[in-house]
Length: 287
Image 1: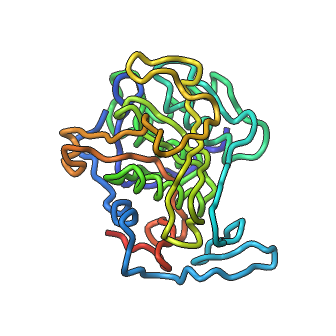
Image 2: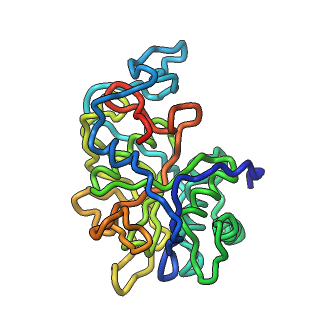
């Protein structure tokens, strides 16, 4: 297991309910994703014009990208055989999701052990700023745990629309080459987005739509009375059929509104303004 790093301040936090998620009253929404999802007309910061490197990679806003930004449909898949891990108990969905994400981030043989999954679950609970009294872990702990272990920074982000949230997820994945967590089943479960297909390259243009996502469901092989059978490992799902990824609302989150928001646990880009990927030809200003 990697040596624990320094925990950075997180933007927002929330707990999984009914076994996998619950929300602290002092949580606050990161307004930036909603702005990004709508498209920014006033980009600031470094130019997003690609420049070639000797290795054949590309740099956009100082970020080295592979493959190079290009026209046309785009596909990205971080999953390697063996990365998927089922949750060992009904309350360890966040621990299993962290375990899978680390498997994708790190080189070498994937770790699928119960011992590591429990350690991830315990870490997610330990780094939460409140005392955990019920089974389950939080997205604050999910993001904070990954950051604590040196795989971040990760934060919780949200958008009012499904496509908007997935566009942010795809853009952050494209620029960091790290997986994204999805809060699903109305806040009751966790999935990992290990890849996506889009109508265009998020690093080439802001005019793109996410059409499919690759999902790693720690509930694979089991069934939920409310949500049905868990997705098979590395399922490719058309966005129009991604029914499990739903809005989440709570009186603890008035900023989400009555209809709720789609919530993701996304990697940030170190050394770039706000950690957000460039949009519309520049860096997104913090809202």
